[in-house]
Length: 112
Image (cartoon, rainbow, N blue to C red; front, top):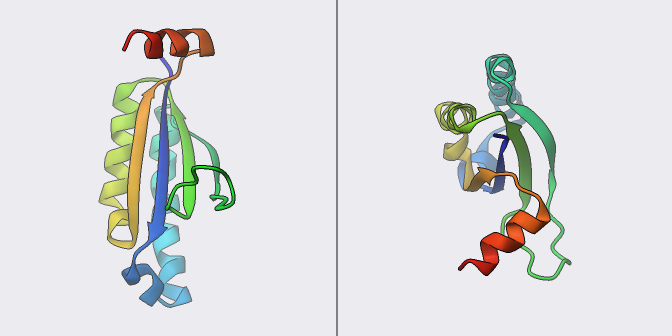
């Protein structure tokens, strides 16, 4: 069943200390790993900067939303992100789970 990963993240001081060429090299490394993830069905849905003006806004500055066909693909994505050195540069919160419709989600909440 389809699973999703939402990342919320903010830069660490180590990222802010990198010059543009080091940042570019890091992003090239990230890009090089995307082919293997795509091959197992991982899809990047959206990336962006969070809007601080929204009610209950997160403290993290950025977000990424991913879709994958199963738990093993999500695990490969999470492990790939970690192996890239991402967490050295960005403080990250991950949320993952099965995607369900609103009625199923309301049933999950009602069952608590």
